[in-house]
Image 1 (cartoon, rainbow, N blue to C red):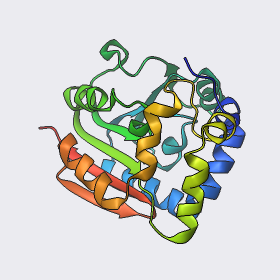
Image 2 (image 1 turned 45 degrees about the horizontal axis):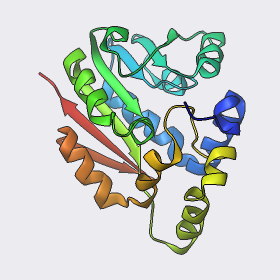
Image 3 (image 1 turned 90 degrees about the horizontal axis):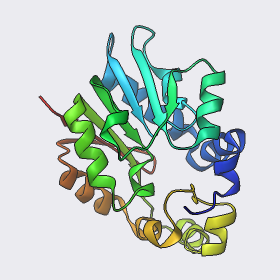
Length: 205
C-alpha cells in the first residue's frame, strides 16, 4: 500500500485543500447531488471521506458511508455521521439503498473503478457519480506539472494510501470530454457539469 500524503493523513487539511481547489463549486455540486437524491431516501456514500455530502442531504434521508481511510472515518463519526471503515472493492461492505453516491473516488481506484460502479448499480436504484476533469487553460497546465510530479503527489497531492502514482496519473490529463466519455462507459445517461466536475446519473431500475 502506498504512503498517504499530508492531506490524506489529516481530515482538516483535506477539507481545507478541497475547498481551495473547488471554490464555490464545491458546495454547488453537493447541493445538486442532494437535489438529485431527493427526500426520504436511503443513501450510501461510497468513499465517503470526511462525510461532507451528509451535510447537504435532506434531513429525512438515511445516510451511511464507507471509506478505507480510518482517519477520515473517525472524523466523520465525531461529526455524528453513520460511517465505517471498509474495502470498497468488497461487495460485502455494501447494503441495499435507494441511491449510491461515488464522489471523487473512481480516479483513485483505477483499475477497480468499473468494479465499484457495478457493485453500486447492483446495490442501488440510482447511482450518482462525480469526477473531476482538468482544463487546458494556462493555469491548469501549470498545476498539472505539479500533479504529474511523483514527489508532489506523495507529499501533498492525491496519494491516498491505496493506489500509487502510476495508477492515478493518467486521469490528470483528462479534459471534460474525456470524463464525459468515461461516464458513458459506466452507463451514465444524464450528466451535469459543475466547475471542474462532471456529475453522472445512472438509473438502475
